[in-house]
Length: 230
Image (cartoon, rainbow, N blue to C red; front, side, top):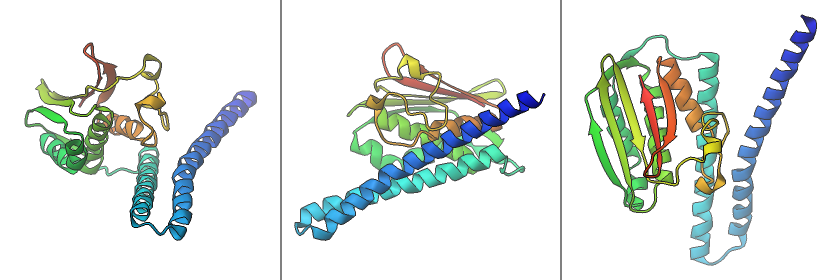
Protein backbone atom coordinates (compact mmCIF):
# COMPACT_ATOMS: atom_id res chain seq x y z
CA UNK A 1 0.00 0.00 0.00
CA UNK A 2 2.85 2.36 0.83
CA UNK A 3 4.54 1.69 -2.53
CA UNK A 4 1.26 2.30 -4.38
CA UNK A 5 0.77 5.56 -2.50
CA UNK A 6 4.34 6.61 -3.35
CA UNK A 7 3.80 5.93 -7.05
CA UNK A 8 0.53 7.87 -7.03
CA UNK A 9 2.14 10.84 -5.28
CA UNK A 10 5.00 10.79 -7.79
CA UNK A 11 2.47 10.81 -10.61
CA UNK A 12 0.65 13.80 -9.10
CA UNK A 13 3.96 15.65 -8.70
CA UNK A 14 4.82 14.92 -12.34
CA UNK A 15 1.45 16.31 -13.46
CA UNK A 16 2.01 19.40 -11.34
CA UNK A 17 5.49 19.87 -12.83
CA UNK A 18 4.16 19.50 -16.37
CA UNK A 19 1.37 21.98 -15.61
CA UNK A 20 3.83 24.57 -14.28
CA UNK A 21 6.08 23.98 -17.28
CA UNK A 22 3.19 24.51 -19.70
CA UNK A 23 2.09 27.70 -17.95
CA UNK A 24 5.65 29.05 -17.91
CA UNK A 25 6.00 28.42 -21.64
CA UNK A 26 2.65 30.04 -22.43
CA UNK A 27 3.57 33.17 -20.46
CA UNK A 28 7.11 33.35 -21.80
CA UNK A 29 6.16 33.60 -25.49
CA UNK A 30 4.05 36.80 -25.33
CA UNK A 31 6.34 38.34 -22.69
CA UNK A 32 9.34 37.85 -24.98
CA UNK A 33 7.46 39.50 -27.84
CA UNK A 34 6.38 42.43 -25.65
CA UNK A 35 9.94 42.97 -24.39
CA UNK A 36 11.44 42.78 -27.87
CA UNK A 37 9.00 45.17 -29.54
CA UNK A 38 9.12 47.58 -26.58
CA UNK A 39 12.91 47.87 -27.07
CA UNK A 40 12.44 48.41 -30.82
CA UNK A 41 9.78 51.02 -30.10
CA UNK A 42 12.17 53.04 -27.93
CA UNK A 43 14.59 53.56 -30.86
CA UNK A 44 12.17 53.64 -33.80
CA UNK A 45 11.39 57.03 -35.37
CA UNK A 46 9.18 55.99 -38.28
CA UNK A 47 5.49 56.53 -37.28
CA UNK A 48 4.22 53.56 -39.29
CA UNK A 49 6.75 51.20 -37.74
CA UNK A 50 5.98 52.54 -34.26
CA UNK A 51 2.24 51.97 -34.79
CA UNK A 52 2.94 48.40 -35.93
CA UNK A 53 5.05 47.69 -32.84
CA UNK A 54 2.38 49.18 -30.56
CA UNK A 55 -0.29 46.99 -32.18
CA UNK A 56 1.79 43.86 -31.64
CA UNK A 57 2.36 44.79 -27.99
CA UNK A 58 -1.38 45.34 -27.51
CA UNK A 59 -2.18 41.95 -29.10
CA UNK A 60 0.38 40.10 -26.99
CA UNK A 61 -0.89 41.83 -23.85
CA UNK A 62 -4.36 40.61 -24.76
CA UNK A 63 -3.03 37.07 -25.05
CA UNK A 64 -1.53 37.32 -21.56
CA UNK A 65 -4.81 38.62 -20.16
CA UNK A 66 -6.81 35.82 -21.80
CA UNK A 67 -4.34 33.21 -20.53
CA UNK A 68 -4.56 34.52 -16.97
CA UNK A 69 -8.37 34.53 -17.11
CA UNK A 70 -8.49 31.00 -18.49
CA UNK A 71 -6.13 29.70 -15.80
CA UNK A 72 -8.27 31.30 -13.09
CA UNK A 73 -11.42 29.80 -14.62
CA UNK A 74 -9.87 26.34 -14.89
CA UNK A 75 -8.66 26.55 -11.29
CA UNK A 76 -12.17 27.41 -10.07
CA UNK A 77 -13.71 24.57 -12.08
CA UNK A 78 -11.23 21.97 -10.84
CA UNK A 79 -11.64 23.07 -7.22
CA UNK A 80 -15.41 23.09 -7.51
CA UNK A 81 -15.62 26.82 -6.70
CA UNK A 82 -18.77 27.42 -8.73
CA UNK A 83 -22.13 28.83 -7.66
CA UNK A 84 -24.41 26.18 -6.21
CA UNK A 85 -27.46 28.24 -7.15
CA UNK A 86 -28.51 27.75 -10.77
CA UNK A 87 -30.65 30.19 -12.77
CA UNK A 88 -32.71 29.96 -15.93
CA UNK A 89 -30.41 30.63 -18.87
CA UNK A 90 -31.71 31.35 -22.37
CA UNK A 91 -29.17 29.50 -24.54
CA UNK A 92 -30.26 30.91 -27.91
CA UNK A 93 -29.91 34.47 -26.60
CA UNK A 94 -26.47 33.65 -25.21
CA UNK A 95 -25.35 32.34 -28.61
CA UNK A 96 -26.58 35.50 -30.35
CA UNK A 97 -24.74 37.60 -27.77
CA UNK A 98 -21.54 35.58 -28.29
CA UNK A 99 -21.80 36.11 -32.05
CA UNK A 100 -22.22 39.84 -31.50
CA UNK A 101 -19.10 39.91 -29.30
CA UNK A 102 -17.12 38.17 -32.07
CA UNK A 103 -18.59 40.28 -34.90
CA UNK A 104 -15.37 42.15 -35.68
CA UNK A 105 -13.56 38.82 -36.20
CA UNK A 106 -16.09 37.13 -38.51
CA UNK A 107 -16.73 40.36 -40.39
CA UNK A 108 -13.01 40.78 -41.06
CA UNK A 109 -12.93 37.31 -42.69
CA UNK A 110 -16.24 37.94 -44.54
CA UNK A 111 -17.73 34.78 -43.10
CA UNK A 112 -21.31 33.72 -43.77
CA UNK A 113 -23.30 32.66 -40.71
CA UNK A 114 -26.04 30.09 -41.09
CA UNK A 115 -28.14 29.99 -37.92
CA UNK A 116 -31.00 27.70 -36.89
CA UNK A 117 -31.70 28.42 -33.23
CA UNK A 118 -34.70 27.14 -31.29
CA UNK A 119 -35.68 28.88 -28.09
CA UNK A 120 -34.03 26.88 -25.29
CA UNK A 121 -33.85 27.57 -21.55
CA UNK A 122 -31.96 25.45 -19.05
CA UNK A 123 -30.89 25.76 -15.42
CA UNK A 124 -27.23 26.67 -15.27
CA UNK A 125 -24.43 29.06 -14.39
CA UNK A 126 -24.79 31.89 -16.90
CA UNK A 127 -21.16 33.18 -17.06
CA UNK A 128 -19.71 29.67 -17.48
CA UNK A 129 -22.12 28.70 -20.26
CA UNK A 130 -21.44 32.00 -22.02
CA UNK A 131 -17.74 31.16 -22.06
CA UNK A 132 -18.47 27.83 -23.78
CA UNK A 133 -20.30 29.44 -26.73
CA UNK A 134 -17.71 32.22 -27.02
CA UNK A 135 -14.81 29.73 -27.06
CA UNK A 136 -16.39 27.50 -29.71
CA UNK A 137 -17.47 30.40 -31.94
CA UNK A 138 -14.03 32.00 -31.66
CA UNK A 139 -12.40 28.69 -32.66
CA UNK A 140 -14.72 28.27 -35.65
CA UNK A 141 -13.88 31.78 -36.84
CA UNK A 142 -10.15 31.24 -36.36
CA UNK A 143 -10.03 28.09 -38.48
CA UNK A 144 -12.50 29.18 -41.17
CA UNK A 145 -11.11 30.21 -44.56
CA UNK A 146 -11.70 33.72 -45.88
CA UNK A 147 -15.28 33.95 -47.14
CA UNK A 148 -16.24 30.59 -45.61
CA UNK A 149 -19.41 29.59 -43.79
CA UNK A 150 -20.14 28.73 -40.16
CA UNK A 151 -23.27 26.72 -39.40
CA UNK A 152 -24.77 26.87 -35.91
CA UNK A 153 -27.83 24.91 -34.82
CA UNK A 154 -29.63 24.67 -31.49
CA UNK A 155 -32.57 22.29 -31.15
CA UNK A 156 -34.66 20.43 -28.64
CA UNK A 157 -34.50 16.63 -28.43
CA UNK A 158 -36.96 15.52 -25.78
CA UNK A 159 -35.76 16.90 -22.45
CA UNK A 160 -32.30 17.68 -23.83
CA UNK A 161 -30.95 20.40 -26.09
CA UNK A 162 -28.33 19.88 -28.78
CA UNK A 163 -25.91 22.57 -29.98
CA UNK A 164 -23.78 22.12 -33.11
CA UNK A 165 -21.20 24.42 -34.67
CA UNK A 166 -19.51 23.51 -37.93
CA UNK A 167 -16.79 25.34 -39.86
CA UNK A 168 -15.23 24.87 -43.30
CA UNK A 169 -11.64 24.87 -42.09
CA UNK A 170 -8.95 22.18 -42.40
CA UNK A 171 -10.61 19.90 -39.85
CA UNK A 172 -8.89 18.18 -36.93
CA UNK A 173 -6.08 15.68 -37.64
CA UNK A 174 -7.09 12.19 -36.58
CA UNK A 175 -4.18 11.93 -34.13
CA UNK A 176 -5.44 15.04 -32.32
CA UNK A 177 -9.13 14.15 -31.98
CA UNK A 178 -8.62 12.26 -28.74
CA UNK A 179 -6.56 15.03 -27.12
CA UNK A 180 -8.09 18.39 -28.08
CA UNK A 181 -10.00 18.67 -24.79
CA UNK A 182 -6.83 18.22 -22.73
CA UNK A 183 -5.28 21.23 -21.00
CA UNK A 184 -2.68 23.11 -23.05
CA UNK A 185 -3.03 20.72 -26.00
CA UNK A 186 -2.75 22.62 -29.30
CA UNK A 187 -2.35 19.80 -31.78
CA UNK A 188 -1.36 20.53 -35.37
CA UNK A 189 0.48 23.86 -35.50
CA UNK A 190 -0.78 24.35 -39.08
CA UNK A 191 -4.24 24.96 -37.60
CA UNK A 192 -2.95 28.17 -36.09
CA UNK A 193 -0.67 29.25 -33.26
CA UNK A 194 -3.19 31.44 -31.43
CA UNK A 195 -4.74 30.44 -28.15
CA UNK A 196 -3.31 28.73 -25.12
CA UNK A 197 -4.86 25.27 -25.26
CA UNK A 198 -7.31 25.90 -22.42
CA UNK A 199 -10.50 26.97 -24.21
CA UNK A 200 -11.74 23.50 -25.12
CA UNK A 201 -10.76 21.95 -21.79
CA UNK A 202 -12.75 24.68 -20.02
CA UNK A 203 -15.70 24.09 -22.36
CA UNK A 204 -15.69 20.36 -21.60
CA UNK A 205 -15.52 20.90 -17.85
CA UNK A 206 -18.38 23.43 -17.91
CA UNK A 207 -20.54 21.10 -20.00
CA UNK A 208 -19.83 18.20 -17.64
CA UNK A 209 -20.74 20.35 -14.63
CA UNK A 210 -24.10 20.93 -16.30
CA UNK A 211 -24.61 17.18 -16.79
CA UNK A 212 -23.91 17.21 -20.51
CA UNK A 213 -21.35 16.01 -23.02
CA UNK A 214 -19.23 17.48 -25.79
CA UNK A 215 -17.60 15.80 -28.77
CA UNK A 216 -15.66 16.82 -31.86
CA UNK A 217 -15.57 15.22 -35.29
CA UNK A 218 -14.63 15.98 -38.86
CA UNK A 219 -17.38 16.33 -41.44
CA UNK A 220 -17.33 14.45 -44.78
CA UNK A 221 -17.33 17.73 -46.71
CA UNK A 222 -14.42 19.09 -44.69
CA UNK A 223 -14.18 21.18 -41.56
CA UNK A 224 -14.75 20.41 -37.91
CA UNK A 225 -18.03 20.00 -36.05
CA UNK A 226 -18.48 20.35 -32.29
CA UNK A 227 -21.62 18.97 -30.67
CA UNK A 228 -22.83 19.71 -27.15
CA UNK A 229 -25.71 17.90 -25.49
CA UNK A 230 -27.21 19.38 -22.32
